[in-house]
Image (cartoon, rainbow, N blue to C red; front, side):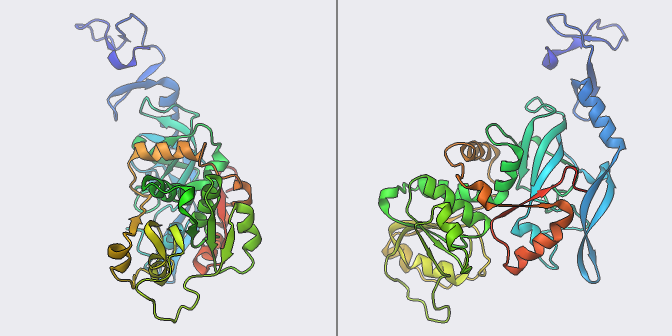
Amino acid sequence: MCRRSWRRRCASSTDSSWIGPCGCSASGWSWCRSSARFIAAPIARAARMLESMEFLAMVAHESDSGIVLARQQVGADFLGPGDVTIKVHYSSANYKDALAITPRGGVVRKYPIIPGIDIIGEVFATDVDDFAPGDLVVAHGYDIGVSHNGGFAEYARVPADWVVKLDTLNARDAAALGTAGFTAALSVQSLLDRGLTPDDGAVLVTGATGGVGSVAVDILSGLGFEVIASTGKTDAGDLLTELGANEVIGRLPEDPEAKLRPLGKAQWAAAVDSVGGKSLAYILSSIGYGGAVAVSGLTGGSDLPTTVMPFILRGVALLGIDSAYVPIDRRRELWTKLGKEYRPQHLSRLENYAPITDAEKVLRAIQGGTHSGRTILGVAGEF
């Protein structure tokens, strides 16, 4: 097709028919005023249908008693701007989503909003050539679920450069991974980019039963690393061993009231940390020479009571992991790896399932520290 180079059949004619340079007819194509381009008629019909329809969503509202997450019928005005409209199959439950329904949680800029930082589903309509209706896609990060309505709805619309087309992963596996799995992969990749190999020694993973930690344990084990899993859940040993942990230990430091030493015994070659706070300070003092810590969380607090000693005497690197604004090319590359060499071998053991209408209950469990693994939130057919 000659979609990129249509010209009028006759320059002096008022006839609205068009042809391409090869003479093919424009029949079956419609002019899209918003994008100033031709789009296939079925796509145009889908987009027009969506603009006039209503759909169901879980919407977070501010109230005097706090943040309320309620099932609500909404219109296309809730979709927001974007080039790709997605029929949502799944979202997932993340710590950031829990903050979205927490008063003064610090992530949502304005209510009401549809939370859900993960969107997994199929393209319903698109204004760009990179995607076609029916493509399985994932979108996460950027402003999704924060200032741009997210995945807790039957439909979502986002810019095309926020969207990743799935190839080897199916929609449910992508939902089981979600932002947490992507963050785990980004953490591992950052350590590998520093030159880390299995021969360097053991890698510590903190918060090992959480979304980031559990996937990181599985990925690292699959890559041949010796993995030490740290968790405060005393009943999680069997699960973490099944995921590939060589050893399971408790929270760090063992004595949270003890004064931290600027440098402790070197115990690990590297670490993936989603806890932060005093735990991170202890880990930094215990990493071997030239090692690194990839940190992505602050469930243990945002303060970091450490010194410069690990950095200037052991050459330790602190690698900040932000999954929200990773450039789209790198994001797509990592999702490809998550479907191949980084694919967790025990993903089914990590996943829980809940209908989207139970999202608030799941997010409250994350807030309370009683949640383990990854919870897929089913959207399609679950309202």
